[in-house]
Amino acid sequence: MGEDELEKKLNKIFFGKEEQREKDYDILKTVEEVFDTFTLRSLFDLSRKVGLRKISGVISAGKEARVYRGVDNSGRELAIKIYLTFSAEFKKGIYKYIEGDVRFERVKITGTRRLMSIWARKEYSNLKKMFSAGVRVPEPLAQKDNIVVMEFIGKNGVRAPLLKEIGDALRNPAEIYSEIQENIRKMVCSARLVHADLSEYNIMVFDDSPVIIDVSQSVLLSHPNAEEFLRKDVSNIDRFFNRTYGIEVHGDTLLEELMQCLRKSEGSIP
Ligand SMILES: Nc1ncnc2c1ncn2[C@@H]1O[C@H](COP(=O)(O)OP(=O)(O)OP(=O)(O)O)[C@@H](O)[C@H]1O
Ligand SMILES: [Mg+2]
Picture 1 (cartoon, protein in one colour):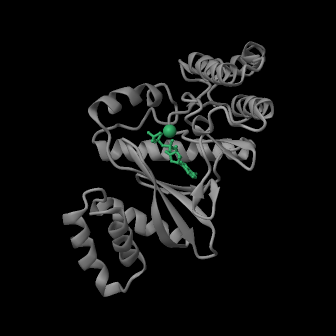
Picture 2 (tube, protein in one colour):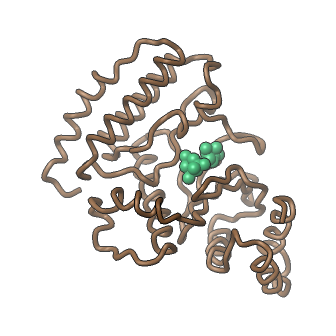
């Protein structure tokens, strides 16, 4: 089934007539494996909660998650991130971000679906902490099971470009660089989190400012690998700006400063 057709069907299910709904559920189940009944129900509940009026197309279809653009009753654009599959390899890889995290220690992880829900909850919880700390991330709006609804970064149906996609065409690289550093500072010292996958692939540029995305793997400062992840994040950003724009980078100074915040967390349970 093509994307257009899927979109039509989804809109019919969520916003069509009551009696039509169950029938569409079945049609969709047999022709489109992307959404199982579980995901459809969660999406349906969430759409009530956030006043979703329309789902209008896929923004991104990655290996584990799909991101859709939606519009709410007031015309505001939304981004809906849905975790759909975790490969065995991916599952193995993400345990290191969940183990060592006091928030999820007591959760026994059994099936893939459970793991996807934990992953989505982790992303939502990280977004909330970062957003409240003033880190420029999409505003988190709602989460249920394997779905996260957040602010759409972009305008009039067009998402903002990633730093990677802009390449060497940034108008204000030095300012963007220091804004990213400021965001890292707030993330570590106020939100008390390390992104743990920060690079030009997970930063969008909107209204001439960086917006940090994709925070499901972000960890608490008390995580045993927090420092290692932070060093990698900071050096990824330095590498990109140094190679692409030849600007003078000072990640080392930032790291030194951040170590104070990192050390404060030692021995303390947040
Ligand atoms: N809030 C948002 N507003 C607009 N576009 C978004 C938003 N969040 C994500 N996107 C788009 O969707 C893409 C994938 O999102 P994200 O990086 O969070 O997921 P991912 O699981 O890492 O997927 P991938 O493997 O494709 O990177 C982003 O590169 C971006 O283009
Ligand atoms: Mg990503």
